[in-house]
Amino acid sequence: FGRNKGMLGFLGGALFCLPFNYRVLSIAALPTTTTRTTIATVSALLGLAGALADLAVPTPALTVPKSIGNMKVPSWVPPFHVDDNLVVPIFSSFACTKIFQAFGFSQELELARCIIF
Image (cartoon, helix red, strand yellow):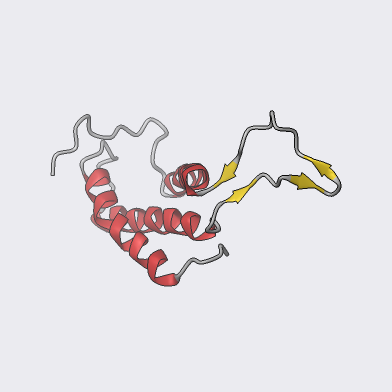
């Protein structure tokens, strides 16, 4: 996947997200039939999705080249970087919607207004 990425960081990111996701989902307005095992499974999958997205992003970030072939890129082209700030939220939110659909969560799922641990 990405350059200079390690499995330790991938697993650390996934494991770090597990308790936070579990807490957020356990206080959300889920259907009454949702079990703790389902919440833990969804929490783990959400953590893995975010960690996988971060693992896929190369380090250092991809940037617009100064020239393409023999043509120079004009100076008015903004510097565009493909880094984790762009990829992780997009990939993670897409994965989140698919995971929620797979487990039958409503699209109107309401999280708590204030998260107090």
